[in-house]
Length: 474
Image (cartoon, rainbow, N blue to C red; front, side, top):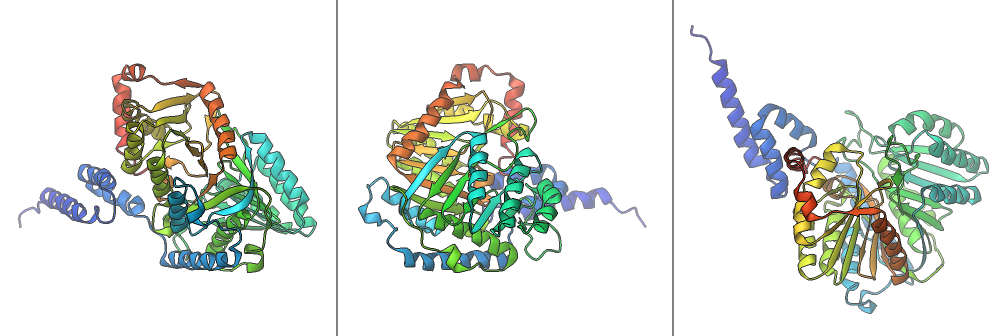
């Protein structure tokens, strides 16, 4: 019997894999994403298919998708009870109305009036104010954070929760199972023993009923005190130097007024997804009085919505810009619709500024990010490289009328994979305050010139362009 030709069999299997994946991969995904995956699979068929099986499809159990749909129905129905705060689209400025309508369709929440907003760009001030509010809590404290570390900052907030629970305050803490792995391991048992309910969000494990793809994470940052004070933004509960050598600079907002009710709904939807227990609706949708004059709108996003809420909203805002756009983000690895919207804005004569950190805490992401600088500079975008710290803040201003503040990075991961939370602000005074913060960023940044950037080393170009090929994986 002749020797079996194993080499031929392997070659046939490789090409069979390539042709099958050529048909399968492009289904229900962007052309750019399909090209990235197909390039990997054509170069390395077996490893490529294995990696694709782990990361290639955004997978959530059907149960979680159905729970998200049910939560959305509950939220839409409950808002009908609080029509006095809802602002009619017909009464808004022509520039605002389309954004308000789109945000409502994407994230379920109406725009509500009567709120107060406090911008908190100082890292320590955020922790100080949060601990003070927890210390003053009389009924309940609800926290949801992507990272909650067992360090000086984490222990300070944990101690405040323990003290509040000791006074009879109901305290619940949701922490992402991966981002807060260390905090869950070190703090969860202690907190539970003191009466604080602790839940891991999006837990990983082969046999968990609610398990999602392990790189789908809950990236939200929400704090709620007594149903009347809320926090959201970019900051986690950890020391600013949790990545050594790169102290973070953040921006959070402290809000009061009817919008807190909507932040509570997002929080309790996540609680429901993890526990299967519905909260007391009298707490989730309680009546909250007006505290100011600011119009706000909550826009959650995540794979459970089946649409890229953050990406669609940002693209629409960019197309609506008339004079000036400032994008502040720690990670800029956008998809083609975002890039096209930015190019369109500059061609219309809109001044577009991008503020990113000069320093990096993720090497491959920074390389991919820098691969976009040529396109942006050619389009006329002004790139500011922030020097003092790692700028982890995430916000966007459009003209003098709209701001978006939250947890969403300007990258494909935040758009498609992460659970995120954003707050739309329709208030010229608050936008002016945020623009003042952005001007401080400009003053502490190096402005990147196109001529200087063109002179970078060839090896840098190769590394950056190679990293860009993996944009769908970052």
